[in-house]
Image (cartoon, rainbow, N blue to C red; front, side, top):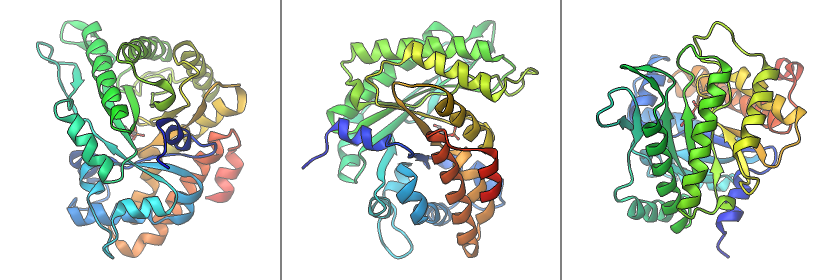
Length: 344
Ligand code: 13P
């Protein structure tokens, strides 16, 4: 029997599980590999990602789905098995990043709108054939001064929300669950309340546009940033404050029909991302499952342990398993500093 959008969305946000964002574009993965002195080639990218997807315990127990880049969904492992089949064999769901990246808005040199709608219906049909059952589109919203005006502008919030809604409708039409990701960046020196207000605006606009586009919220997963101070802000908020303000923000903006919310890590350290998620699940009664869809916060440690050398696969896999397990505990509010230290 074919799974409905609702079934897929429920599996994506199953309790104690989260999503591995392994969909870095060629430019982004090159940056990550530069940091570990590793050349980014089709082969090194494949080997590294195969290492993650073959971490059987992590994939089976803690990772409900993996977001892939176009190159990866077409790649085979060293033994010729399609990478998608390795993910599926572990009971995890293959997903695909379908946006074409954030490009400068016209007549506005500072802000961005995410492109990729043209031809998307046909691309979705192909990705479905390749095994993808969910997808991701990321909008980028920056806080600060851009030229002679403050960011974000209404045009940036509106254009991105509209594109997200058009994308989400196309995904559902093709039997694919859309992850909608309006990311308010942590770059800058703004405080947590400014992040709260801007994120609220972006989410209000997003859910209005999803309504206009007829998108089924029960078959949609939201991937937001947390309410958090900018990296350069001199007053960083406590873990409890990030949890409190993020929960308040989401309750204000996200209908309970949405089955789950999976956060991006956005440049938080891996343990901060875990601690924040844990604090929300430990202290609040929530209408949706609250989990993770981390890129950097799941991969920084395994990337470092692998270091571009396939002889280090088991060290890389141990590091990935550890972070996946810590975030799984956080997704049910059962993570503690102590378990983090004991298990490391
Ligand atoms: P980070 O967790 O590194 O922010 O990546 C998540 C992601 O998928 C961004 O689009």
